[in-house]
Image 1 (cartoon, one colour):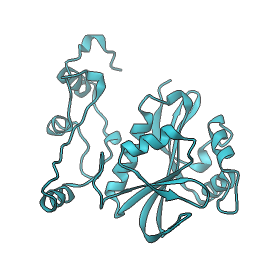
Image 2 (cartoon, one colour):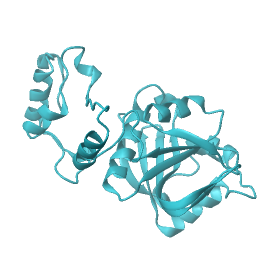
Image 3 (cartoon, helix red, strand yellow):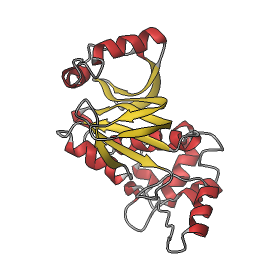
Length: 244
């Protein structure tokens, strides 16, 4: 059964799913941090929501964001108080590793960050999760230290241009005006169509297939004919594709 992302209340998520076993083990609760189970139950009581990817086997991905306006205490320094988004939980099931589900989740997170008035977004990750750290670094997150719980703190800031930075049109123009040595290149590639047959965002937008202002790309619903048109633009033989 194919899975999909959806926004769900904590109270409607099965905490007994084996997906959460590693999170329970990583965060049993310490002097410096609340245990995962206690945190989850409080979120459920408060009616909070999470971005969840589910399939026939259960939970496949789990993402929680938190708006903050406070200091970040590191082992050697304290980062000043400012409005930030914290990716308080981010986990992808083993069966979905290396299938771009993680990249899709980070893309949705950065899309949300772009809409909010926050300079920074950050995530905390233990050393042992090397693949996850590498994935966030590919999206421009940079390590700024280690927190009191022993986790790496990775931050992405609008004030620094990095790989796959998220800026709106005015911010991009400002960066170009102020930093003449900066070249901005925007690429959108979807490997399904193969090399040389990329369907880019401009083409989708010009043909009415992209998200409207303030809308997530994942909220766009295409008709069967629209989907076929996209496939044909990507040089895909539609007769070999089942569109239901």
